[in-house]
Image 1: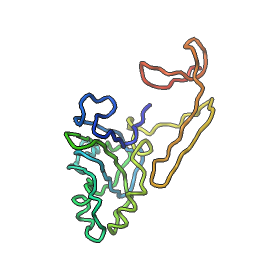
Image 2: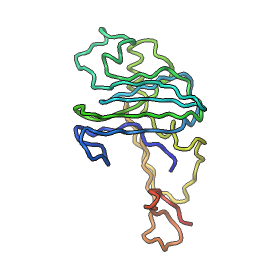
Image 3: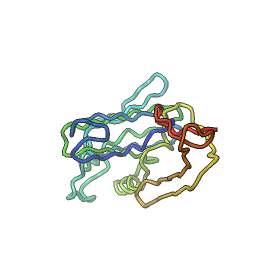
Image 4: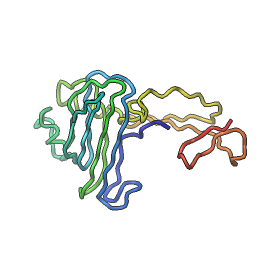
Length: 208
């Protein structure tokens, strides 16, 4: 379909979907930036180790690498600063970067024996002037997903849906906004029109 799923996964002490060994996995999220974004800060949180790379043309730079972990609940904003957020909260805060359309972003996640596994990545516009502003922006920012990254370098064109039963949008403060489309599926591949699942390609195809 040309899209990248939300970079947000959690699987506790077991293995992620498709994994075979508990607490042992490597995930790779990769995609092309769809639109230029002014100076922004990419933040990874969760439990494990992350490596973030940005490729522009023939040049690849490391934006972040290191461990992510669960914050200590005893921490107080009065005792931390922007400079110590990584050490205190367990985030990996990438170098503030201006993203350009067509840049390639690669995020590798390693779960190697940590108590639980999971990762989430967010993009915070601008550079926060204070710890409180940074944490507020991190809380409110959406998880990185299809509006920012695509598997194709060129932006995906809009595709009109000729038949749609319903569209349900769910939004919550601090959560991920979702839209569920309900489409009619054909009951037989012999039917001349309608949607059906192309299992060989794992895509939804329209017959017409």
